[in-house]
Image (cartoon, rainbow, N blue to C red; front, side):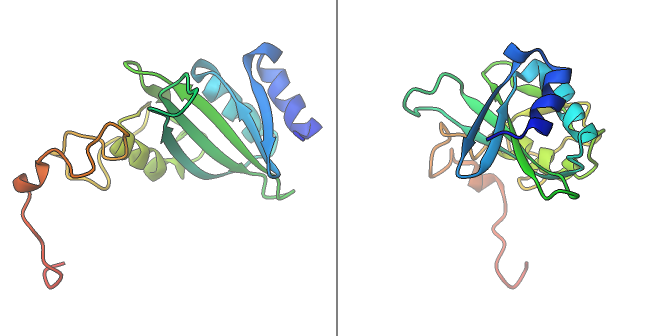
Amino acid sequence: MITETIKAAITNCLVPSGFSTSEFRDNQRIIVPAGQLYKALECLKKAGFDMLIDVTAVDYLNYPDAKDRFGVIYALLNTVSGERLYVKTLLNEPEISLPSAYPLWRGADWMEREVYDMFGIRFEGHPDLRRILMPEEYTAFPLRKDYPLRGRGERHNFPAITRAES
């Protein structure tokens, strides 16, 4: 059950029809529209969720009954009460960008870069949005469901590194 503290914090910032809540195995979740994500995160930070634990994404391509292509999930923690909360927003192509959470939590820096690198989701206002795991010249996003398991032949462009050289 979403606690009254969380409900009050989010209701004060967003219209009641602007978000939905759910719970699964003691995980409290709020689903907000992409256009209201930053406002929701800002309100939750003021309500005590002072730590961003993780930012990740999911590609729902070919999922049964999925209406949206991507989900971006923010895991938040209230370090005083120990309460955890997951904030989710949904995106569809061609507009797959969100406002950066970097101004709220500096720890969002590398997490957002990883989501950008693996899924191609852009974070507007991020101070240094560039690849973190793949080479800069890499043009694809490997964790998308439409990316072939064996790649698209990009490997021949990059030198092989042996274990001794790494």
